[in-house]
Length: 426
Image (cartoon, rainbow, N blue to C red):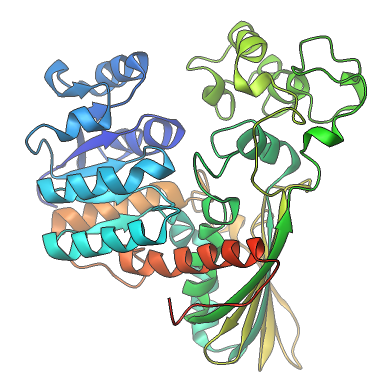
């Protein structure tokens, strides 16, 4: 292995700070953080201290960082959705290769602009479609490509967002309003669109979609509810979305139960019962779920008509117990059922007994998006250091665009009452 890759990180939110920056400790012989930027001075100060970043390369915005001459070999862009393209275009013109958080942009023309800029600058852009790097989907890809179940005719996919996760991220949180971030089918499900296209090796011809905000609307606010969960609400006891139940008392994620990580570190940098209570009293995560400025859907179905005549359906729903993905692949010689939340893959070749594979028992690291986070970053580092070209697993910018085109077409169809949207003419 050659030199370390010098990396600058723009955006120290949950992904930038807790995922990408931390990989420098996992791969100290491959990665050195030499510059950081965020609008929160405390996050910048702590990152500088933790990763020994010089004061002269610590910045209070990505824009300020990008005003400088090139500071590193590569840049991680983990800012907000609608900032990605402007930051990425500027970074490419400065000579950076990029690890770019998804989604690239909710604007189709912005996506195309970034593709053109990357080509003109001759730089590499890898989009953070981490599912491609998980042991679960890597194995699933190998099974499908082996031809054991024949040609893929139909796929049925379910994205279980999770009842409390939906309330956290898409009602109270950063991705609640598409005018400020992205439509939910893009923000949450460009992962799904990408992995389904990658697994099947297919191209989408047309899309139709339906969905809406069924529950989280002001007119559904129960009598006796308050604008804030800790503000005199008289229906707290029977409300599962009560912020105190989720952020303080949840057995796995609550501060009173010992959790100090995600999602609590989104509310406050150093989660304690006291700091979480303060955040709920005054911050966005303490709001009643029926009194937020959210406009993204809480359920959506998408039908994809593929160019070879096969079909894929995706259902995304915020009203599920589990957080995870379930997919059934139906082929000409058999079927595959893949349950990522349980790490189970079932293969049934017609006329034969079902084979069950428990991916969790294969001795592989499944932390961080099923093990995808760390593998994504390591692959990016190796590709840059070794100077090799992307392989079939790499989510290049061009490959990622296919998932964006599908998701944006689905949103267009939804807004048009389910009208079919052709992709090949876009």
